[in-house]
Length: 163
Picture 1 (tube, rainbow, N blue to C red):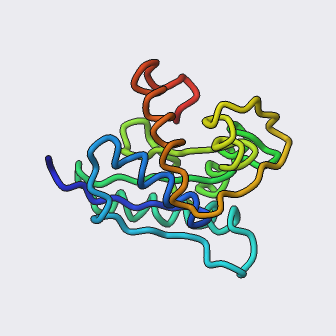
Picture 2: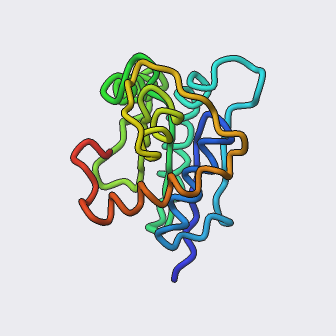
């Protein structure tokens, strides 16, 4: 397997652990990743990820290598998938950066309302997106959830809303 260099842009440690484990399920060596995570206690984690997105997209283009990728996880909060994609597009425009091209190796995860709602759903619960769900005691406890998501994706293929 080729070593893949990638950047993971996310809001918090739970996002980081979830995405790393998801990619590991598909054979990626995440030791070669650079992680940009919102610094705790310094304002909005969503805002950090949104503002950092054009910076990381520009860096990805500068490298220009086929084996380089950008993975982003940002909670949908009250905006949802379409709203967050619009926010990322607007962040690019504000920074004078061309928006993501379809050919670029960029994957954006947008759990709505939050990663905790994904975890509850993957646990088999009926989920209301506007309801708040409890955080895991330890971030690493998400492994069964990641396995469930990977199994669903392998069985059904990535849904049309994956972007």
